[in-house]
Image (cartoon, rainbow, N blue to C red):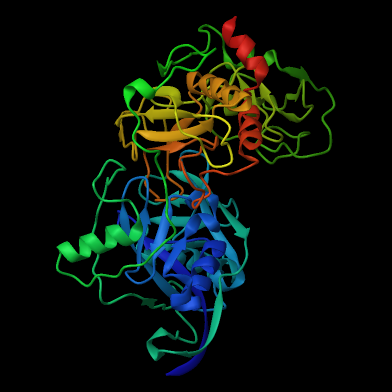
Length: 500
């Protein structure tokens, strides 16, 4: 044994065989439960640390992560890293994916990038650790050596990962001076007793109750393997069975089902003509940067992509919010978006026009069921059922012509059948028609790309409890979702617009 210290990072294995790190806050939460031992129950509810991970529970005895809405089980591990490396300093390196959100690099990659950054190297070649990318620190970009495709990267400071010290196995120590291209050695702690058992698509209709202990126990027992049972708190994802005669239409809303509609921008209008409605020309630009290209407004636009038919030194101010940009940059931003006749300020997110999304075709059902939600005992429940099948991406999606997956459908969501609950439903119907509830991108929880993901409007998918954070009671939920809808440009005024 060797006295040492280490940064502890909990990781999960994705479908591509890559170990993906949980964030620092989630790793602290898992580590705290692990250190508490048997008195903590052996299960970790990840939604308690990060609401985006609400469907996930980790069983520490079998070292597996269970996703409640799809039944997917994945291995997890506890890894040790040098405390002087990126996780021990709270440094996170991320790349921008096709949906415009940021994805952290695998831990070994992030550590390699950070080490080169600290040594003030102008760039780092990741081929030494098996990736065909070069990170250019001058432009903060990632370049694919084969395709020459470029992506933005960023360095972000977060909380440090949990640190441990004391007696660690000698094989978990690191060389004093690792080579310039190699990542510091680290060794995971794995459960040697339970092998990986891939399980997918166990739904609520399965005879197996979707609780981690039951899933793990039944699978391991059936395979003749050691059974590790725990007792997580009772999770109620769906209400008791409801007969067709018990289902009621919602007064004042009418139809109980609608399909995705696709609203296109009016043909014949160029991007310049669209943006002209929202802009005022600025003859004397302020002494500040354009937040799109990061060049001074007094200088020409720094945008290097396909050149719009507009002078690169013209500057405009958005009418409602007053933020100022190169017209060249705004046109380029519009061309890279949904081209639906709307514009969203990249600084303050003010929406001009009617924002629409890229949600793939599907069906939304909604009706009343005769059960009450926790915290709403004075009314029945509105149940929403979203169903989107897998398909092929269209021209508005990240990878046109490529197939996309649709995990976990049909998805059941719940609202109280109250005045405010019905108001939320009406606005969700507008969001559905504008294709804003779902999108195609990279899942922030599984890492899977080209799949249907939620699109910044939170839903309650747990019926009779709030163990995951996606259930009731939650006194702030209706107000919060109204604010999220408003951020997408959907307010009570939108209901009047839809009638026009």
